[in-house]
Length: 104
Image (cartoon, rainbow, N blue to C red; front, top):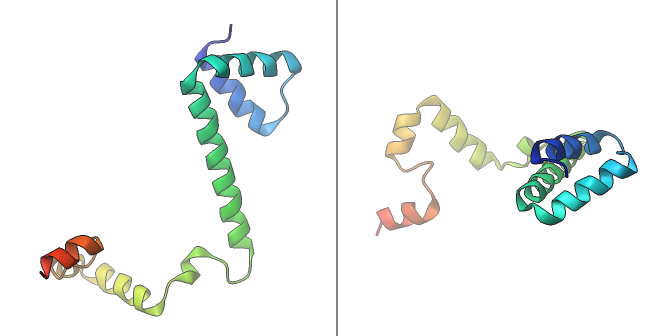
C-alpha cells in the first residue's frame, strides 16, 4: 500500500505525465480509502484549471481581469492607495452590510 506522501507525489507527477499502470492503480486504490489525499487531488485539479482559465483570459484581447473594472471602481482604488487611513475612516473597504448598518 502506498503512503500518503507517496500518493501526493504521484498525483503531482500525474499532472505532468501519464503514470505507469501499476502506479495509477495504486493511487486510485489509496484514494478510495483516504479522503485527505482525495481532497489534495481535487485541490490540485482546481488550481490547475483556475490557472488555465486565467491564462486563457489574459491571452484574449481586452480580457485581462484588471480591465473589467469600472472607472468609478478604479477611482476608489486610487483614492484608497493615496491615503488608506482616510479611506478607511470614511467607510471605504468595508463590506456592504456593515456600511449600510453604520448609516442606520
